[in-house]
Amino acid sequence: MAAPDPADLLTLALAVADEAGALAVAARERDLDVDTKSSATDVVTAADRAVEELITTRLLDARPADGVLGEEGADSSGTSGVRWVVDPIDGTVNYLYRLPGWAVSIAAEVDGRIVAGVVHQATTGTTYSAVLGGGALRRAADGTLTELTGSAVDELPQALVATGFGYVVERRTVQAQLVAQILPRIRDIRRFGAASLDLCWSATGQVDAFYERGLNPWDLAAGGLIAAEAGLRVEGLAGAPAGYDLTIAAPPALFGPLHDLLAGTGLALLDAPPA
Image (cartoon, rainbow, N blue to C red; front, side, top):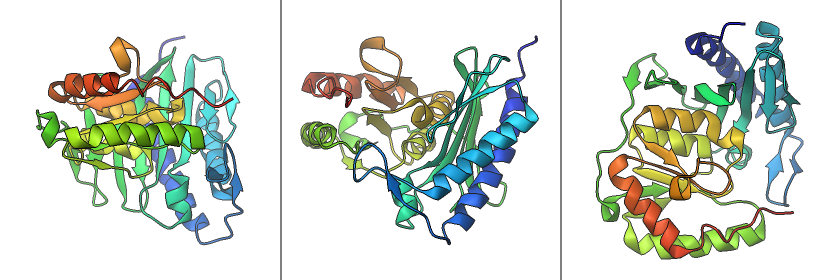
């Protein structure tokens, strides 16, 4: 079977993300039926589940042999070599509180490599997208397209750095200690509450860099590709791939200094996954 064209996968993901975002916006006006996951502060809503079901249905209707991995439980391997990695509402706490910082994230993985990704911020109508080797774009609500190239800041003391925190107390404690050591060495910290958007805003240069410990595949897949295609280095510590242990996304001039600062604290590696 011939490998699918990443541009075709992106076209499908864009259409599905638009529909999923509209459903999420409409669902916010109804009873959210809030539940919890890893801790009392890690919430999931009926809207998360409904949006993931919609995304899964639309993707598999179009490509029934594909697999899907979703934050809210979708998990099928498929037979085509394509797997969709889905976060139906990244930033559920923001969504719950009617803050605009949440997004639908859909990525296409072919034989283990992310080749297309979409992050759709339905509250603003802004969509970020990329295909492997094809650059990254922002589509504004009016349809205007902008090629993304990241920040031009090249000195860490001038860098505005985004990060995020987990929901398990032990992890949050370590992450807070890490911020206390990093903050005096940079311009400032921003914590928006949705890793997919942190990565996209790093790609646009709205923040200069991003790091976080504890990202799952659905947090990283689409936004990580978008950041990388905008010219950022997206990696973990000491040449490891970006992932659960650590994700750093920064322009090449900032990546080394930020990496060394994080590594030098010794704290990035102390945060063991919860049991």
